[in-house]
View 1 (tube, rainbow, N blue to C red):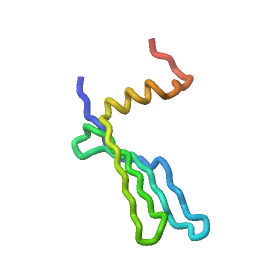
View 2: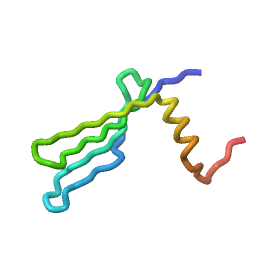
View 3: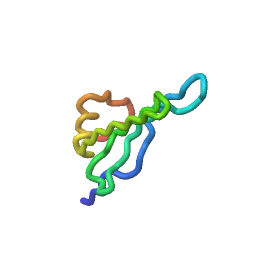
View 4: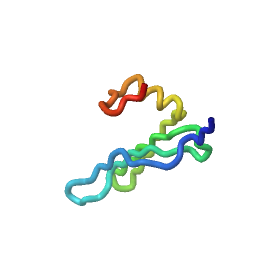
Length: 80
């Protein structure tokens, strides 16, 4: 069996300033270069000139286990 690890990125949330339409917050998931982990990146631009970038890293296996432990299984095709 072969496993490739994590790849790519996904935007989870974008917040826009209602008055200007400018992006003030972006939350995304992105794979590390080696594919062994996933990074949650939370970028804030709430005040002019202030940029806050917070990163949290988790292995792909730990993320899968967390979703299975805390996520709701969706109805659909069952594989027995």
